Image (tube, rainbow, N blue to C red; front, top):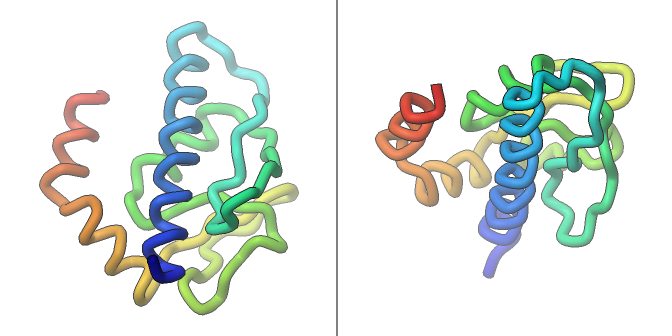
Length: 117
């Protein structure tokens, strides 16, 4: 399995965990900061990013955006689009973006967004 495939799979697992945290926060009306997981490409990353669900939601709904701790950015497959105090938002580019498209065709992603709202 190449780097882009491995990274995409790891990010998908972490994104699903973070999605559940965000959904639970909304369900229970939690407005304070909570520990979300870094959505980087590292297999064994255990870093947490404290933020509230409202801040995470716009990142979550954009298929090519992920939040990572600043020193986990991989410039060959992502570019920084926002910088915050304790994390950056990266947009997948090149091979990583193509892998997301293969793993999650736009139709599937759109259907998930409609169902979740």
